[in-house]
Each structure stands twice: as structure tokens, then as C-alpha cells.
Image (cartoon, rainbow, N blue to C red; front, top):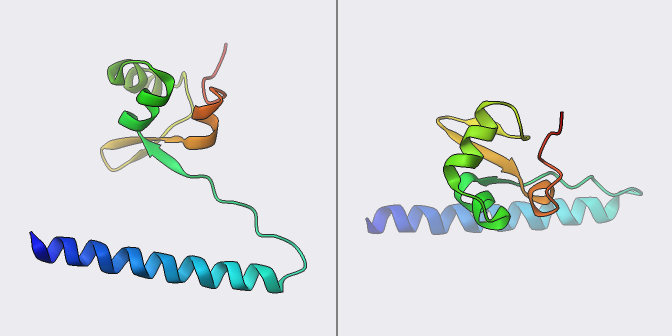
Length: 90
């Protein structure tokens, strides 16, 4: 269990360093690098939308919302979930 925690801590440090390097490189460019969309879990999206997790999963399965499958889990675009624009109409 401690080994897993140590590995997570190490990966977070690597991500922080890479993010700082990316920021440094972006600052050297004459144009900004577009922000990459963050994709959140079904639980997180359901909490933001205040809908049941099973409803959100069903919407993803039927194509009624923007979602992508990561392994056996669904992910939803964070910024679009926050403004509810990830829901497809029609």
C-alpha cells in the first residue's frame, strides 16, 4: 500500500515538472499552445450536473451526450459538463 502511495507521489512530481517545462516552452513561443480538454469521471460529471450516475452512463451509451470510453469507464469533457453543452440535442 505504501509503495503505491509513493509511486503516486512520484508521478505527481513528474507531472508537475512536465507542466512547468511546458509553461516555460510556451512562454518562449510567440503564440500560446491551446489548452487540452480535461476529461472527468462519471461520478464527477454526475455531481456537477446533479443527475444520477446511471442516467449519465445511459446518455453516454446512447450518444445523447459527449463522452469517451477509457477502458471500461466513461469520461466527460469537464468544461462542457460545467456549462451543460456536452448534452446533444436532436
